Amino acid sequence: MRKIILFIASSLDGYIARASGEIDWLFTDQDYGYTEFYNQVDTLIMGNKTYQQVLSFGEYPYKDKEVLVFSQTQQGETDNNTKFVNNNWEDLIRILKISNGRDIWLVGGAQLIHVFLKHHFIDEIILSIHPIILGSGIPLILNDPSLETELQLKDVKTFDTGLVQIFYNLN
Image (cartoon, rainbow, N blue to C red; front, side, top):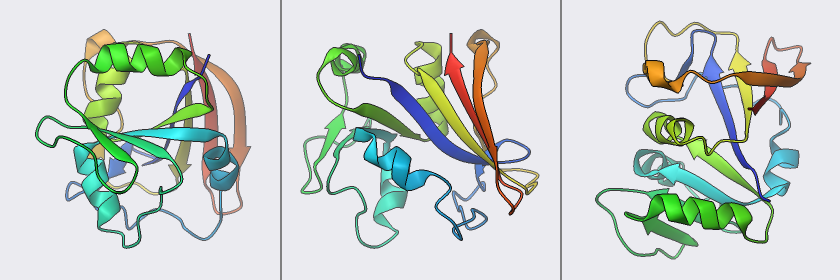
């Protein structure tokens, strides 16, 4: 069975982006395990806001992967191996998990992470905590008491830049 893995970065105070959506504070000086992780997935899932942000970075970085964008407004397919998902998404996720293939990367954003946590679709979290306090922004986990979830620590990696990468399995 394929795993859905949330591979994401946050500030020390739990924000995945500034309120504007900017991620200019993220370290880009090292790979931080990204290449190894990227090679273990063949499908990416993201929300439409995240997808639009990715498109603003220049050359589309995920041409070699199947990309599913969850959107309430966009429909159809694009020339980037991207398909917009508007309905029957729970069935789609269940089918994806049992289908042949590599693991699935839940890229973000916060609203989609919230939905996937609420429906217990995330199998693993790899969280890279950057040594910065933003004070405000887009939170990694939206405030919702129904999301209480126990995590099982799998591994911790530290880097000389102060970045800490924590690996959790979800029960």
